[in-house]
Amino acid sequence: MSTLGVSFNDDALEKRVLAGVDEVERQLSAAVDSPDQLVAEAAAHLLNAGGKRFRPLLVMLCAEFGDAAAPDVARSAVVVG
Image 1 (cartoon, rainbow, N blue to C red):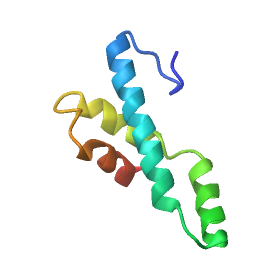
Image 2 (spheres, rainbow, N blue to C red):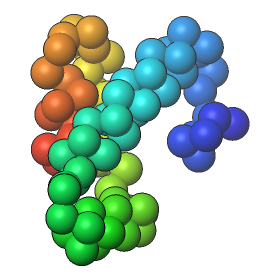
Image 3 (cartoon, rainbow, N blue to C red):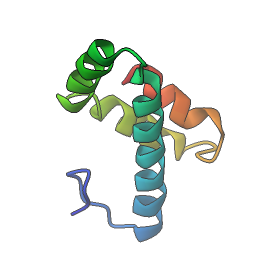
Image 4 (tube, rainbow, N blue to C red):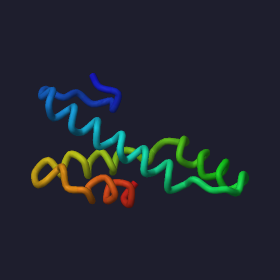
């Protein structure tokens, strides 16, 4: 069982997907960063509320059928998150 809440039978696939999800998290955090404390706190609350990880996970998994290493895969996952 991985930290994603899903089981993988392929260690290499799990490693790639986890790396992609980590990149999505990094980009999500950067996207909601704001110099305004109120905006930053509200955005962080929404980001940490959950429920925004299933669609990005699906993007990362679907990318495995094509070029999972393409630079826009994580950005696409952030957009649908």
